[in-house]
Image 1 (spheres, rainbow, N blue to C red):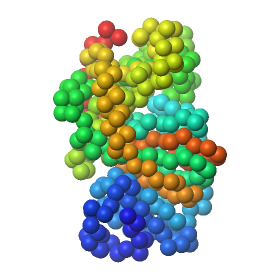
Image 2 (cartoon, one colour):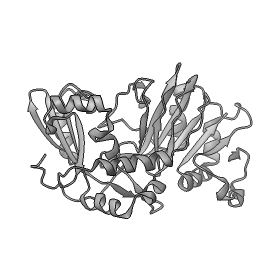
Image 3 (cartoon, helix red, strand yellow):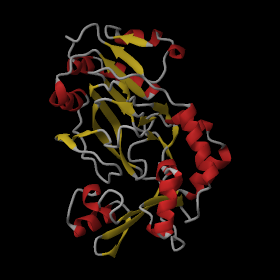
Length: 339
Protein backbone atom coordinates (compact mmCIF):
# COMPACT_ATOMS: atom_id res chain seq x y z
CA UNK A 1 0.00 0.00 0.00
CA UNK A 2 1.32 3.45 -0.88
CA UNK A 3 0.45 6.17 1.59
CA UNK A 4 0.51 9.51 -0.23
CA UNK A 5 2.89 12.13 1.15
CA UNK A 6 0.04 14.65 1.36
CA UNK A 7 -2.13 12.38 3.52
CA UNK A 8 -3.31 14.48 6.45
CA UNK A 9 -2.09 13.29 9.83
CA UNK A 10 -5.62 13.06 11.21
CA UNK A 11 -6.76 10.89 8.29
CA UNK A 12 -4.40 8.06 9.24
CA UNK A 13 -7.20 6.68 11.41
CA UNK A 14 -9.18 6.06 8.23
CA UNK A 15 -6.50 3.81 6.70
CA UNK A 16 -7.58 0.16 6.82
CA UNK A 17 -4.75 -1.73 8.52
CA UNK A 18 -5.65 -4.80 6.48
CA UNK A 19 -4.44 -2.91 3.39
CA UNK A 20 -1.00 -2.27 4.84
CA UNK A 21 1.97 -4.60 4.99
CA UNK A 22 5.64 -4.36 5.89
CA UNK A 23 7.02 -1.96 4.79
CA UNK A 24 4.52 0.88 4.62
CA UNK A 25 5.53 3.11 1.71
CA UNK A 26 5.41 6.90 1.83
CA UNK A 27 5.93 8.03 -1.76
CA UNK A 28 6.51 11.66 -2.66
CA UNK A 29 4.81 13.27 -5.65
CA UNK A 30 8.18 14.52 -6.85
CA UNK A 31 11.82 14.49 -5.80
CA UNK A 32 11.56 18.22 -5.03
CA UNK A 33 10.08 17.30 -1.63
CA UNK A 34 12.89 17.32 0.94
CA UNK A 35 12.91 14.21 3.10
CA UNK A 36 14.08 16.04 6.24
CA UNK A 37 11.35 18.68 6.14
CA UNK A 38 8.61 16.20 5.35
CA UNK A 39 9.47 13.73 8.12
CA UNK A 40 9.83 16.51 10.69
CA UNK A 41 6.34 17.76 9.78
CA UNK A 42 4.87 14.24 9.76
CA UNK A 43 6.95 12.58 12.48
CA UNK A 44 3.95 11.37 14.49
CA UNK A 45 2.50 9.73 11.40
CA UNK A 46 5.80 7.99 10.58
CA UNK A 47 6.28 6.84 14.20
CA UNK A 48 2.77 5.41 14.33
CA UNK A 49 3.26 3.40 11.16
CA UNK A 50 6.68 2.22 12.32
CA UNK A 51 5.28 0.81 15.55
CA UNK A 52 2.32 -0.78 13.80
CA UNK A 53 4.18 -2.37 10.93
CA UNK A 54 7.86 -2.37 11.89
CA UNK A 55 9.13 -0.72 8.71
CA UNK A 56 8.66 2.44 6.65
CA UNK A 57 9.99 3.04 3.14
CA UNK A 58 10.47 6.64 2.00
CA UNK A 59 10.48 6.80 -1.80
CA UNK A 60 10.98 9.56 -4.39
CA UNK A 61 11.95 12.18 -1.84
CA UNK A 62 14.90 14.49 -2.40
CA UNK A 63 18.01 12.95 -0.82
CA UNK A 64 21.31 14.52 -1.86
CA UNK A 65 23.87 11.89 -0.93
CA UNK A 66 25.35 10.50 2.26
CA UNK A 67 25.79 13.81 4.08
CA UNK A 68 22.11 14.62 3.50
CA UNK A 69 21.16 11.11 4.70
CA UNK A 70 23.24 11.62 7.85
CA UNK A 71 21.57 14.97 8.51
CA UNK A 72 18.16 13.46 7.84
CA UNK A 73 18.59 10.88 10.59
CA UNK A 74 19.94 13.28 13.19
CA UNK A 75 17.60 16.21 12.46
CA UNK A 76 14.35 14.44 11.61
CA UNK A 77 14.65 11.92 14.46
CA UNK A 78 16.56 14.09 16.95
CA UNK A 79 19.20 11.46 17.79
CA UNK A 80 22.92 11.17 17.21
CA UNK A 81 24.10 8.29 15.06
CA UNK A 82 25.65 5.36 16.89
CA UNK A 83 29.06 3.83 16.48
CA UNK A 84 28.85 0.24 15.27
CA UNK A 85 30.34 -1.60 18.26
CA UNK A 86 30.91 -5.30 18.93
CA UNK A 87 30.40 -6.00 15.24
CA UNK A 88 30.03 -9.44 13.71
CA UNK A 89 30.34 -8.63 10.00
CA UNK A 90 32.79 -6.61 7.89
CA UNK A 91 31.80 -3.07 6.96
CA UNK A 92 33.54 0.27 6.44
CA UNK A 93 32.94 3.84 7.53
CA UNK A 94 31.45 5.99 4.77
CA UNK A 95 31.10 9.23 6.74
CA UNK A 96 30.94 9.82 10.48
CA UNK A 97 28.80 6.97 11.80
CA UNK A 98 27.31 6.04 8.44
CA UNK A 99 28.59 2.64 7.32
CA UNK A 100 28.54 0.44 4.28
CA UNK A 101 26.07 -2.41 4.45
CA UNK A 102 27.69 -5.77 5.21
CA UNK A 103 30.59 -6.37 2.86
CA UNK A 104 29.95 -10.00 1.93
CA UNK A 105 30.57 -11.20 -1.66
CA UNK A 106 27.66 -10.29 -3.91
CA UNK A 107 26.90 -13.94 -4.73
CA UNK A 108 26.12 -14.67 -1.08
CA UNK A 109 22.85 -14.10 0.71
CA UNK A 110 22.69 -12.73 4.25
CA UNK A 111 20.06 -14.49 6.41
CA UNK A 112 17.45 -12.37 8.14
CA UNK A 113 18.47 -11.05 11.54
CA UNK A 114 17.92 -8.21 14.00
CA UNK A 115 21.02 -6.04 14.28
CA UNK A 116 23.19 -6.87 17.31
CA UNK A 117 20.67 -9.40 18.66
CA UNK A 118 23.69 -11.50 19.68
CA UNK A 119 24.42 -8.92 22.41
CA UNK A 120 22.45 -7.35 25.25
CA UNK A 121 22.77 -3.85 23.74
CA UNK A 122 21.47 -2.73 20.38
CA UNK A 123 20.09 0.16 18.32
CA UNK A 124 16.32 0.62 18.35
CA UNK A 125 16.17 2.07 14.84
CA UNK A 126 18.20 1.25 11.74
CA UNK A 127 18.18 3.22 8.47
CA UNK A 128 19.18 2.03 4.99
CA UNK A 129 19.83 4.46 2.12
CA UNK A 130 20.03 3.10 -1.41
CA UNK A 131 22.53 5.20 -3.34
CA UNK A 132 22.56 2.78 -6.25
CA UNK A 133 20.29 -0.21 -6.79
CA UNK A 134 21.90 -3.31 -8.29
CA UNK A 135 21.08 -4.47 -11.79
CA UNK A 136 19.73 -7.82 -10.58
CA UNK A 137 18.77 -8.86 -7.03
CA UNK A 138 20.28 -7.17 -3.99
CA UNK A 139 16.96 -6.69 -2.19
CA UNK A 140 16.93 -6.20 1.57
CA UNK A 141 14.36 -8.81 2.64
CA UNK A 142 12.52 -8.11 5.88
CA UNK A 143 10.21 -9.98 8.26
CA UNK A 144 8.07 -9.10 11.27
CA UNK A 145 9.78 -10.32 14.46
CA UNK A 146 6.41 -10.52 16.25
CA UNK A 147 5.09 -12.93 13.63
CA UNK A 148 8.28 -14.99 13.89
CA UNK A 149 7.80 -15.19 17.67
CA UNK A 150 4.18 -16.24 17.29
CA UNK A 151 4.99 -18.88 14.66
CA UNK A 152 7.69 -20.66 16.70
CA UNK A 153 6.26 -23.62 18.68
CA UNK A 154 5.55 -22.83 22.34
CA UNK A 155 7.77 -25.63 23.63
CA UNK A 156 10.75 -24.37 21.63
CA UNK A 157 10.17 -20.77 22.70
CA UNK A 158 9.93 -21.85 26.33
CA UNK A 159 13.16 -23.86 26.13
CA UNK A 160 15.10 -21.02 24.51
CA UNK A 161 13.69 -18.53 27.00
CA UNK A 162 14.34 -20.77 29.99
CA UNK A 163 18.01 -21.31 29.14
CA UNK A 164 18.89 -18.22 27.15
CA UNK A 165 21.75 -18.37 24.64
CA UNK A 166 25.51 -18.43 25.02
CA UNK A 167 27.49 -16.94 22.12
CA UNK A 168 31.14 -18.03 21.89
CA UNK A 169 33.58 -16.28 19.55
CA UNK A 170 37.26 -16.97 18.88
CA UNK A 171 39.30 -14.21 17.29
CA UNK A 172 42.23 -16.19 15.96
CA UNK A 173 42.54 -15.23 12.31
CA UNK A 174 39.56 -16.86 10.59
CA UNK A 175 36.81 -14.42 11.56
CA UNK A 176 36.85 -10.66 11.99
CA UNK A 177 39.94 -9.61 13.97
CA UNK A 178 39.23 -8.42 17.48
CA UNK A 179 40.77 -5.07 16.56
CA UNK A 180 37.93 -4.47 14.07
CA UNK A 181 35.20 -5.83 16.34
CA UNK A 182 36.13 -3.64 19.29
CA UNK A 183 37.53 -0.66 17.33
CA UNK A 184 40.85 -0.68 19.19
CA UNK A 185 44.31 -2.24 19.15
CA UNK A 186 44.59 -1.96 22.94
CA UNK A 187 43.94 -5.25 24.73
CA UNK A 188 43.19 -3.46 27.99
CA UNK A 189 40.45 -1.45 26.30
CA UNK A 190 38.94 -4.70 25.05
CA UNK A 191 38.94 -6.10 28.57
CA UNK A 192 37.30 -2.94 29.95
CA UNK A 193 34.62 -3.04 27.23
CA UNK A 194 33.90 -6.69 27.95
CA UNK A 195 33.66 -6.06 31.68
CA UNK A 196 31.26 -3.15 31.13
CA UNK A 197 29.08 -5.24 28.82
CA UNK A 198 28.99 -8.51 30.79
CA UNK A 199 31.16 -10.36 28.28
CA UNK A 200 33.52 -13.03 29.57
CA UNK A 201 36.87 -12.69 27.78
CA UNK A 202 40.08 -14.70 27.79
CA UNK A 203 43.39 -14.33 25.94
CA UNK A 204 43.92 -17.95 24.93
CA UNK A 205 47.19 -17.06 23.22
CA UNK A 206 49.08 -13.86 22.52
CA UNK A 207 46.65 -12.61 19.87
CA UNK A 208 43.86 -15.16 20.28
CA UNK A 209 40.87 -13.74 22.13
CA UNK A 210 37.88 -15.85 23.18
CA UNK A 211 34.65 -14.24 24.36
CA UNK A 212 31.47 -15.68 25.82
CA UNK A 213 28.24 -13.81 26.43
CA UNK A 214 24.94 -15.00 27.80
CA UNK A 215 22.04 -13.27 26.02
CA UNK A 216 18.30 -13.25 25.54
CA UNK A 217 16.45 -15.39 23.03
CA UNK A 218 13.29 -13.25 23.15
CA UNK A 219 12.70 -9.63 24.09
CA UNK A 220 9.80 -7.34 24.93
CA UNK A 221 9.44 -4.14 22.96
CA UNK A 222 9.78 -1.23 25.43
CA UNK A 223 7.00 0.83 23.81
CA UNK A 224 4.44 -1.61 22.43
CA UNK A 225 4.96 -4.32 25.07
CA UNK A 226 4.95 -6.97 22.34
CA UNK A 227 7.20 -10.02 22.47
CA UNK A 228 9.64 -10.58 19.64
CA UNK A 229 12.02 -13.34 18.63
CA UNK A 230 15.35 -11.60 19.19
CA UNK A 231 18.57 -13.56 18.78
CA UNK A 232 21.01 -14.74 16.14
CA UNK A 233 21.25 -18.40 17.03
CA UNK A 234 20.40 -19.43 13.46
CA UNK A 235 23.31 -17.30 12.15
CA UNK A 236 26.00 -18.00 14.74
CA UNK A 237 25.50 -21.76 14.91
CA UNK A 238 27.99 -23.72 12.85
CA UNK A 239 25.11 -25.39 11.01
CA UNK A 240 24.59 -22.06 9.20
CA UNK A 241 27.74 -22.72 7.17
CA UNK A 242 27.75 -24.76 3.99
CA UNK A 243 28.63 -28.42 4.58
CA UNK A 244 32.11 -28.30 3.08
CA UNK A 245 33.27 -25.29 5.13
CA UNK A 246 31.59 -26.64 8.23
CA UNK A 247 33.36 -29.99 7.97
CA UNK A 248 36.68 -28.30 7.29
CA UNK A 249 36.36 -26.25 10.49
CA UNK A 250 35.32 -29.26 12.55
CA UNK A 251 38.30 -31.20 11.21
CA UNK A 252 40.69 -28.36 12.03
CA UNK A 253 39.48 -27.03 15.38
CA UNK A 254 38.35 -28.29 18.74
CA UNK A 255 34.73 -27.35 19.35
CA UNK A 256 35.66 -24.63 21.83
CA UNK A 257 38.02 -23.05 19.27
CA UNK A 258 35.53 -22.62 16.42
CA UNK A 259 35.50 -19.03 15.14
CA UNK A 260 31.90 -18.63 16.32
CA UNK A 261 29.16 -20.82 17.67
CA UNK A 262 26.15 -20.61 19.96
CA UNK A 263 24.79 -22.88 22.67
CA UNK A 264 21.90 -22.93 25.06
CA UNK A 265 22.74 -20.95 28.17
CA UNK A 266 23.59 -24.05 30.19
CA UNK A 267 26.28 -24.95 27.67
CA UNK A 268 24.31 -27.69 25.94
CA UNK A 269 24.10 -28.07 22.17
CA UNK A 270 21.20 -26.61 20.21
CA UNK A 271 19.47 -29.22 18.08
CA UNK A 272 20.05 -28.55 14.40
CA UNK A 273 16.47 -29.58 13.67
CA UNK A 274 15.27 -26.71 15.88
CA UNK A 275 17.45 -24.22 14.01
CA UNK A 276 16.24 -25.51 10.64
CA UNK A 277 12.66 -25.04 11.79
CA UNK A 278 13.48 -21.47 12.85
CA UNK A 279 15.20 -20.74 9.53
CA UNK A 280 12.14 -22.03 7.72
CA UNK A 281 9.89 -19.67 9.67
CA UNK A 282 12.09 -16.71 8.75
CA UNK A 283 11.90 -17.77 5.12
CA UNK A 284 8.12 -18.20 5.17
CA UNK A 285 7.60 -14.71 6.60
CA UNK A 286 10.09 -12.90 4.37
CA UNK A 287 8.90 -9.88 2.39
CA UNK A 288 11.04 -8.41 -0.41
CA UNK A 289 10.84 -5.23 -2.46
CA UNK A 290 13.05 -3.95 -5.25
CA UNK A 291 15.29 -1.05 -4.25
CA UNK A 292 15.06 2.20 -6.18
CA UNK A 293 17.98 4.60 -6.03
CA UNK A 294 17.21 7.27 -3.42
CA UNK A 295 15.04 5.01 -1.23
CA UNK A 296 15.35 5.22 2.55
CA UNK A 297 14.17 2.23 4.57
CA UNK A 298 13.59 2.76 8.29
CA UNK A 299 13.16 -0.32 10.47
CA UNK A 300 12.35 -0.72 14.12
CA UNK A 301 15.23 -3.10 14.85
CA UNK A 302 13.21 -5.04 17.44
CA UNK A 303 10.05 -5.36 15.36
CA UNK A 304 11.68 -6.24 12.03
CA UNK A 305 14.50 -8.51 10.92
CA UNK A 306 16.44 -7.83 7.73
CA UNK A 307 18.90 -9.56 5.40
CA UNK A 308 20.24 -9.33 1.85
CA UNK A 309 19.67 -11.24 -1.37
CA UNK A 310 22.56 -11.98 -3.77
CA UNK A 311 22.98 -9.51 -6.60
CA UNK A 312 24.66 -8.74 -9.91
CA UNK A 313 26.24 -5.45 -10.92
CA UNK A 314 27.04 -2.56 -8.61
CA UNK A 315 25.07 -2.02 -5.44
CA UNK A 316 25.56 0.72 -2.86
CA UNK A 317 23.43 0.77 0.28
CA UNK A 318 24.62 2.56 3.43
CA UNK A 319 23.41 2.22 6.99
CA UNK A 320 22.96 4.34 10.12
CA UNK A 321 21.60 3.48 13.56
CA UNK A 322 20.15 5.47 16.47
CA UNK A 323 18.58 5.05 19.93
CA UNK A 324 20.80 2.77 22.02
CA UNK A 325 18.95 0.24 24.14
CA UNK A 326 20.26 -2.16 26.78
CA UNK A 327 18.32 -5.21 27.81
CA UNK A 328 18.18 -5.13 31.60
CA UNK A 329 16.19 -8.36 31.88
CA UNK A 330 18.51 -11.36 31.74
CA UNK A 331 19.65 -14.26 33.83
CA UNK A 332 23.13 -14.49 35.27
CA UNK A 333 25.75 -16.26 33.18
CA UNK A 334 25.54 -19.96 33.86
CA UNK A 335 28.58 -22.26 34.30
CA UNK A 336 30.21 -22.95 30.94
CA UNK A 337 32.84 -25.53 31.82
CA UNK A 338 31.34 -27.89 29.27
CA UNK A 339 32.30 -25.57 26.40
